[in-house]
Picture 1: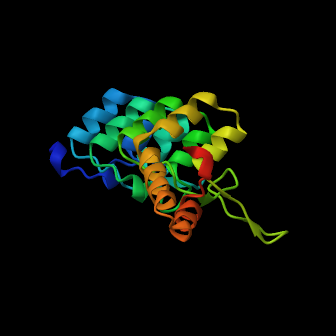
Picture 2: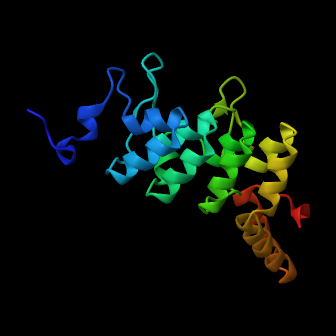
Length: 196
């Protein structure tokens, strides 16, 4: 008996490896398939197996970003993908895009309004601490792009509307003579005072 399409859930259509069709389409850059799947009700925030062998789970957003498929990423973000959900178990999307020099993907993230100023523990794989020394390395996406000498990424991050908001807030605190508030904001976003 043939089931109507609306009666088939994503759970029913997972591959043997556990990937959903939306994750497979996003990971492989099939933007037309992503568009059709989203239109058909595929859930953009579902966590599923990234591959048969890795044991890693991911969202379609994470897979599109890691594979550098900006159009798929853009479609997902425009159609209900919650970027905060994708960051729940991984590093920030902006940090990943900066490290991997994914300029087109970073454009899509900036257009979606993702905070480009956030500082996070980062070791290149989602960040954490150095257990040998007990130190934690905190980096912004701009610092990561600078370390990798990704000039175009650096320019985009410095000129993003979200970066301007941080600089404006910092400037206002400094001009008002509220040094402690400026320092707290600078620590929160791990920015340098000479950014503006």
